[in-house]
Image 1 (cartoon, rainbow, N blue to C red):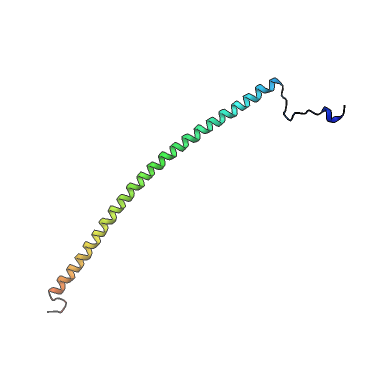
Image 2 (image 1 turned 45 degrees about the vertical axis):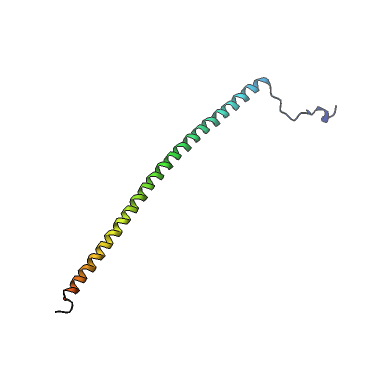
Length: 100
C-alpha cells in the first residue's frame, strides 16, 4: 500500500466517545456563559433606557423653568427701562433741565 492509500478520506476529526462528553460539556458551558452575558446586556440596556427617560424628563422640566425665568427677566428689564424713562420725562416736564 502506498502512503496515499493510508490517509483517511474523511476531513472530519474522529474523537473517542469519552472526548465527546467533554466537548459537549465545554459547549454547554460556553452556551451558558453566552446566555448569562446576554441577560446582563439586556438588563444593562433596560437600565440605561430608564435613565435616559429620567434625564430627558428632567431636562424638559429645566428647559420649561428656564423659559419662564427668561420671560420674567424680560418683563423686569422692561419695567426698569419704563421707570427710567418715566423719571427722565418727569424731570423734563418739571422744567428742571432748563433751569426754570
